[in-house]
Image 1 (cartoon, rainbow, N blue to C red):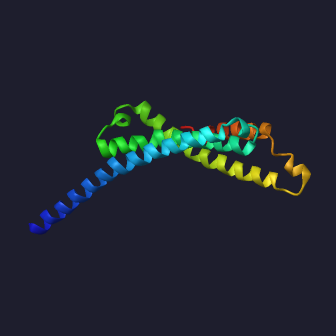
Image 2: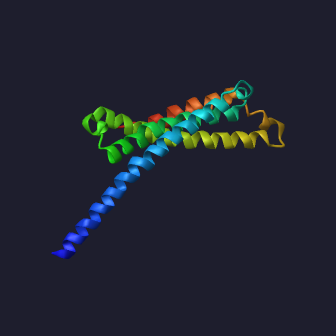
Image 3: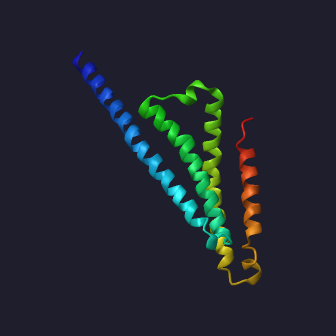
Length: 156
């Protein structure tokens, strides 16, 4: 009987530790992650960087990171840390939160890869390869990639 009560006590302690980690750690991640994304958007949106395709990719990446933080991480923090279940009570909101977090996570990585490819274009010794680094091409990649990944991850 005492081993059962001690294992129950351990489980209760571990559950309370997890709750407090979500309550404080999750809140810190949401706040500082959102602030970091907003500051990155402000920096890369400055007038001097607006003509740079790589800065465009990084602005869009941070928009998707902000969307991911506020869709998935915020809902998990509220549900696990504060027992506020807004996605469990509304099935449409649950699906929207899941879908948004799924495609925003993928699109964030996609934009980072596009920014890396753009840097390869810029540093190429070949002039025709360097000419591929344009704002028009970056907009095309962002819009095309967004449509592709949204359709790829759309619910069937």
